[in-house]
Length: 63
Image (cartoon, rainbow, N blue to C red; front, side):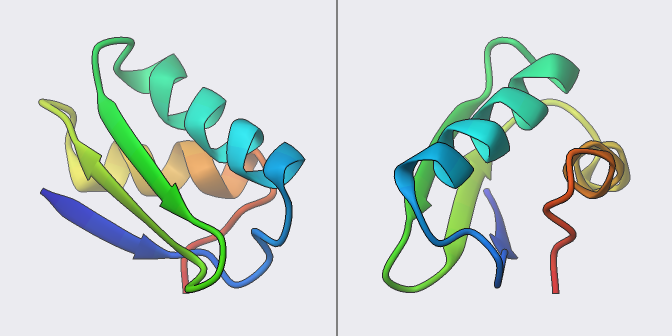
C-alpha cells in the first residue's frame, strides 16, 4: 500500500480527480481518499513513480 499526502485535495471533486488520475495508470487500483487528512491510500501494481507522475500531471502533486 502506498500513501500520498495531497495538500490541495480539499473537496469531493478533487478526490474524484485524484482517483481518476490513479486509475488512468492502473484501472484496477484500490484507492481511498481521506479529505480531512488530505491523504490518499493506494493498492496498485503500478510503480509509485508512475502514480506520482499521474497525480502531478492532474494538478495534485503529492507533498
